[in-house]
Image (cartoon, rainbow, N blue to C red; front, side):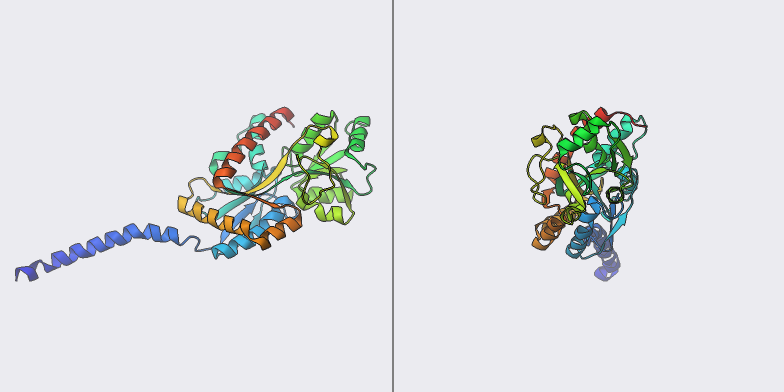
Length: 331
């Protein structure tokens, strides 16, 4: 009888223990289920530019690997600043990712030069993976009177400010390399900012500007079609996609700039989620079909996993901050 009398208490204790174990296990189960709904990948530039040519095939391949759609959201403006700032305000749950270029490092440095509050801080993001890393290419229209970078520089020296060049925005990844070229060559050109690389290239084709500096992936097909000429690039070795184009340094101009693309999550994203993304991106970057697709656009995959990418990002950010400081305050 005593056993029967105490049975309800023992049963209640067992039920309480089971509920406690279930509650403890629930977060782990939830984390293990990531992702269980579509993921948004913010691209802080309009369609048609370097970031977009990487992001779209990447989102498709990553979605297949994760088992959930990865939806591109183009948010251009302010050289990438509007979209990056939007991403910085997202929840750190892995359901909002950022596909950014090296401009992510430039813009806070520019805000400091301009004595204004940065729209975001670098420590609001964690590096997940670098996908590509290309030097920018100096491109002019096919009917431009310059066949070499030396002729381009000579024309700029002869008529300071007469050559207009387009960019994705002030202090962006198309502006900074041209500022470097001006310093290296001792020339003056007129900067015309647009909302992204795509509109800047369209302005070049339409004759509104005479030159742009952009990634190979956004102009390779135009070069091959004979619509534009690539005079030089800001790298240190021949480009795989445009092997005949010389480096600026080989032409006596000390200017170097790499426009890389990388995937970022929000700081505070659970470690298990970041690891899941790293694993998926590593698989995607090693897939031969994906590599061919990216290379075909003009930007071969140069993958770096989170630890290597984070170190690279810090070093590159320091160099870009110095370049912005040399450009100085622009109205």
